[in-house]
Image (cartoon, rainbow, N blue to C red; front, side, top):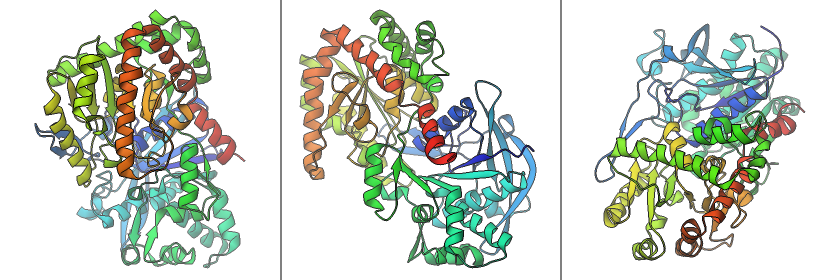
Length: 563
C-alpha cells in the first residue's frame, strides 16, 4: 500500500447513499458531505464508522402523531465490499472480533476516499457482541460504551491491520470516537516500552488529534459512570484514562477529546464562543459547517447553474455569479422543484398542495429546543395572516430519538395543532425524514423556517441546503444564520440576540415570527415577486456559494490537518 500521509476521519454515523441507513440526521449528513468534498479536493483521507446493520429506525406515524419505530434491514453486499482483515478489542474481559467493509467515495477526478464500516456480527463473537454494531444510538449506556470502544479503539486497530501507518491526523467528528486517543497512547507505550503518561506523550498524541464538537446540548456529550468504565475497559485503557484526569465520577468523552487534541473547533462562529464558555480551560476555534453543493442542488437548479455558471461543481464560490441569472429562470427552476415535492406529497400522503400558495417548510430532528410548534403559538394570528394577507401552507418532517419522550410529545402536539387548522390551512407532516426527503423539501418549499432556542443550535445545515436552492430562511439568529442573515437580502431574522428568559423568548419569538410573515414575507411573495426572487438570488449567490463543505474542508486543511 502506498505510504501517503493521511487524515483518518472518525464518525459514529455517516450518510453516503439513500439505501444505506447508516445515519440519523445532521451529524451523519455532514459527514457524508465532508467526505464528498474531500474527495473532490483530493485530500488524502480514510474514514471510519460503524456498520449499523439495523440502521437508526424507520419512522411511522399514526393518526395522532404517535411515532412508531421499526428496524431497517438492508443488503450490505449491494453497497459494501468486505475486507479480509480482522481486529480484536477487549470488552469486559471478552475478546470481540471486528471486521471492516469498504465503501469508496469517488471524487470528480480519479481520487476516492475509502470509508471503513466496522462490524462485530461475526460467528466468533457471542450473540450479544454480534449485535454491538447493529443499531445507531441504540441500547443503554453499556451498549453505547461498547460501541464507542469498537469505533475508537477498534477503528485504530483496523486501520493498522490494513497498513495505514502514515496517518498524521485523527479527526474525531464529535466525542463518540474519543477512545481512539487512548489507543494512540497505548501504541506509544508499546513502542517506547513505557507505561506512564508524561508531558512528552501528551504532546505527541495531541499533535495527532483533531476534535470537532457539534452541540452545546448536554445529551450530545456522552458521559459514562466510572463504575461502568471500570467494568468494561481493560486495565491499561483504564489506567491511561485515569492518568489523564478525565474521570471523576464519570468519563466525559468530550473532555477526553479536548485533553488529547491539538486543534478543537465548534461548527459556527457563535458555537465557538459558546463552546469556549462551556470549556474555558481549552483553546477552541470555529469552522462553520457547510453542505456539498452537487449533492443538494435540485435537478432543475443544477440545469440552471450549468447554463449560467460554468464549473460551479468544482468551484462552489463561482455560485456568486447567480446574481446575473434572470428572474424568470430562477423562478422556473424553483417551481419545477416545488412541483416535484408536491407530487411526492400527493403520491405518499394523498394531499394536494397548491403550487401558487406560499409554502413554508420545517424539517429537523424533533427535539423540544427546536420548537417546531412555535408557528402554532397563536392560531388566530396565523388564521388572520392566511385570510387577510396571503394564503400559506406548511410542510413538516422530522424524527424524534426513540428515547426522547419530549420530542415524541412535540410531534403529537403538532398533530393536534394541525387538526385545528385543517382544512383551511393545508399542513402535512411527512414521515421518515431522510436524505431523499430532505432534498425534496429543502429545494421545493418557498421559505425555510427554523426557530430553535438560542444558543442551542450549534450550526444547522438544512437552511444552507435551502439557500443553495434559492429558498430564503426565516430563522432565529443562532448557529450559521448569524453569519448568513442579511435582512431582506438573504432572508429574515426572527427575534434578536438579546438574552432573556425562555418563557419571554418564546412569546417574543412567536410575535416576531408572525410580524415578519404578516408585514414582510407574505406581502413580498404575493405583491412584489421581483423583490422576492431577488432575495432568492442573493440566497444562492451569498450563502449558497459560501456555506459549503468545499470551503469548510479548505479551512480544515489549513487550520488542522497539514500544518
